[in-house]
Length: 187
Image 1 (tube, rainbow, N blue to C red):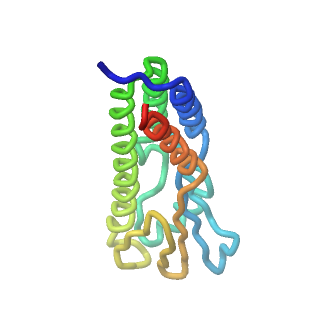
Image 2 (image 1 turned 90 degrees about the horizontal axis):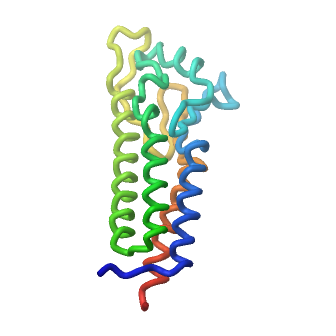
């Protein structure tokens, strides 16, 4: 028989589920591009359901090096990611209601797997956009892969990649999922 978690542990799961839903509406990742002519920087901001920032300007500049256009249609994940997040939030609530530690272990595993797949997906897109350049582009640059986090320089552009508010909130959600493991360790 599976051990039941305390009400405090279940409450941490309910809070985690609520915060997870909130992350849908926050940016998770972004890039900021700086150049002498764009000293204030140009942004690409990635939410779980959309792209924001100066996408049109970045696309017009990327055209010169033969990079594919950024658009929400380019990233099919943006169509279904909010549904996956909502489904995971429901699983968290379900686990909190049943208060079964055995379900929590599976939930934590799903959360870790989702994080790994998310990082892999960001990396995959960075590789694809940076290395699949049109050889007939007006300006020839060597293929490149911007980092997931950190700085990169291409021609006269310096890019800074970073995780944003939604990702930090995801970390808090993960810690709230781990809380019952700590709370129930001696019971």
